[in-house]
Image (cartoon, rainbow, N blue to C red; front, side):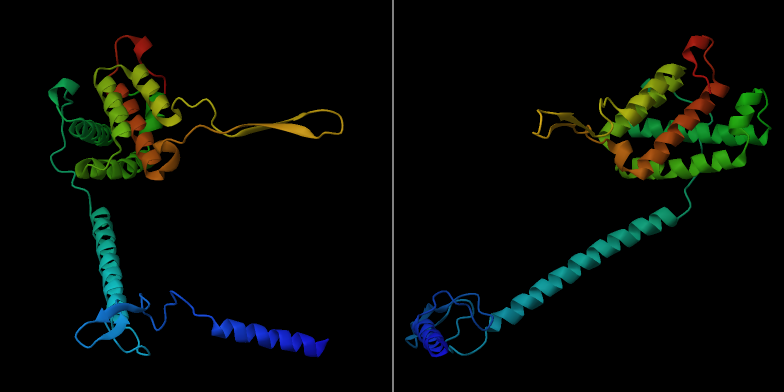
Length: 272
């Protein structure tokens, strides 16, 4: 039995070696031997490097590898440079010079980004001034919310990324629209409606905030049926931790704006 198996294996190897392998790329060539004909020397060769030496390596393979490596390095350098510039910009102190001392109405500012920037700067500067004066005229509940220096510092840290993104035009259009609406309502002293916009921005109109799976018995000895309801799509607030912080910060400065500019109609104010 062993001799028969050995003879069969030898015959199989002989048959395989006698077969012509087509489209076999060797020696780093990207084309097969005979894919190009040198009419001047009447010789066949490789189309990739136009070499007529069949046993020679592809001369263009090294050039291609060098080009790919160079392109990768340039791409990597470009990405790294962009990241370094962005990091340097974020590390630099934010320019708080010339803060607005009066709040403009929405119709007086054409650009939504400019209005949100104006509203945030006004509220933070007013917060600083009021805190320096001891929050004169504030109730005990309002003092508890805004007297602590950490609350102002946290609001500034949360909102600086928003101000940078507004300047660079990188705020998502849907988020910018809602922030603009929140600021517009707050400038008109419609604080309850502004809080409703905040709830829509954070929670959205999702019906299912998480996936629900239910198993219901089918028939006897036939297992069960599975009913699955996938969660609704996530919004920017759900996915971006930076956006979460500045949206919370936006709500905080609107609450402060209500303290210094309350609506005479108490039904339009939002309780802290």
